[in-house]
Image (tube, rainbow over all chains, first blue to last red; front, side):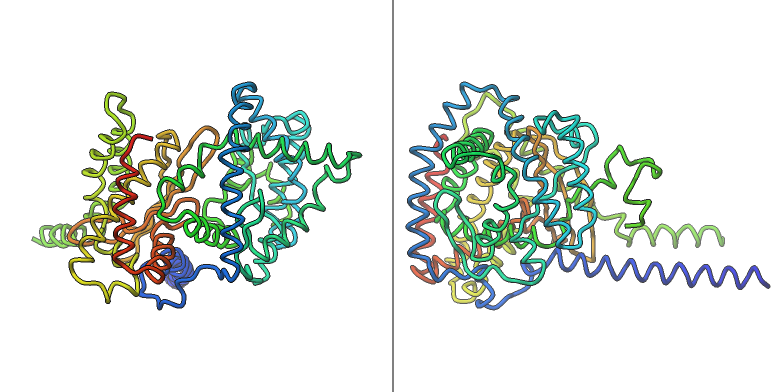
Length: 273
Length: 195
């Protein structure tokens, strides 16, 4: 008799568990599948408001010319002179400097995993990675960086993008994200280094040119493939930010990293976070 | 006798369960592999690649659904002729864009992370590796006419169909559907030129 009750309880338990997981799966699936399948009304077609379109298109045009006639040629020259591994290291260095900002924003969103990931990456890459020039946290331990900024933090608290903005040199942004970029700039360690304005701008320019030298003509691709690059980038930007604010499906956090395969080695697990 | 009935029932069960259907992930893999096969070839020009890929991709795409979703509210107002022409042009733009993106990603190795199936809908998540970068590419599919068909591609969280829908909708609103079709025509000519 007790065995039978036990079996029954087990059955109920599994059914309940099943129901819980099935419910989660359904909701997640529907959310991921979403509206491309439904017949949404025209009003919801607009992914982001753009009341300043004429102004934005002007800045877009200037950025386009800057890109093709100034930044790209400079980046091409730079690419010829500096070998790829060195450029990757420069990129790693700047990315590592931005770790504190990503960590802080993770924390502001109560994302302890993201916070742990960024702190872990910062510590490992600054020490073993020689001041951030290398990325052993990823190449050895398989811990990928997260992408968090203050614009996303604001989005997490349900603050919408406001309206679309194209910023000079920076490119696509929104009222919210431009404010976020401004706030994040206070978390840039270089700001607190003893640099003159000229030196600071030179370093920022190096960061931009270096990044461009590693880029595979993304912008050229968009210009070549879309009917109106301005509209394409605008909706892509709106979608990208929305995706970043939601939970990332592809978040390869530290739990999946090989180094933490051993449960005993997972510090986050000790505290049950 | 009992055994026979039982095995018969089992066979029936398996026949009707989703195990018997071609898996969406396998379909995606087939398409990706066949596109990469073309991309890797060095003996043909970009334009020829485009033609080859076009033939291979079309059978995996649910073009009717894609074009209807892309036109959205403007679908109803379009004539049958406009719809057909739009579908024909859109598939070429979609294939060209996909080809260029995959080319940019270095024809990189693709990881098939997971597939989720719910009824006749499926989502396949993949990760394309390209020189240290990992680009998430998601395929949204429907089971139609006896096969899994792709009806949206999501690159790094950006749905191509949604993007087309938003930008094409804007162009139609300002200039009309015929003008959009002309613009698409011109774009395809431009895309087919060697890069």
